[in-house]
Length: 146
Image 1 (cartoon, rainbow, N blue to C red):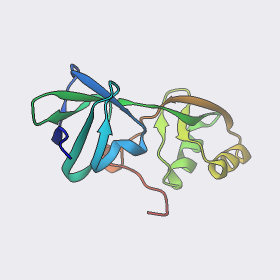
Image 2: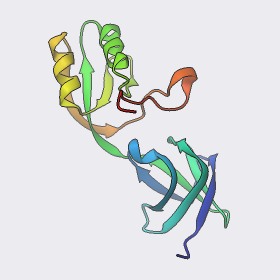
Image 3: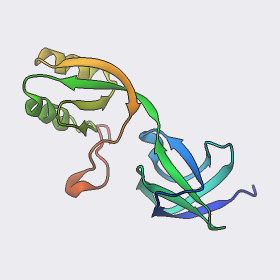
């Protein structure tokens, strides 16, 4: 396999190419990816990393491949007590994107049912998903199955 190789990630807002990845796909260590333009490359990082918009794969030939969050099926959650709803989501270790007027989570019928029972209004949307990081503002949260 003779693919361009990436062994490091940098911040870049001016990449030559982009790759669109879901939230789950942005958590990786070693994987063959395909840019939005169709070029394949190998990512082989020392450790598993959680990647976000603004990060870029630095290929060994010097090119940069920027990371773009993919459109994903999500639940947009609103309600009169958004803080309480956020607490219940966090209590289940569910990744959550927190905004002023709503919360976004990946679609999950069990969490949806629980939230509706405690007064949440829920709407299905398809948008990029960039949830809060783990403790201290980085890393990932994981469900109870981790």
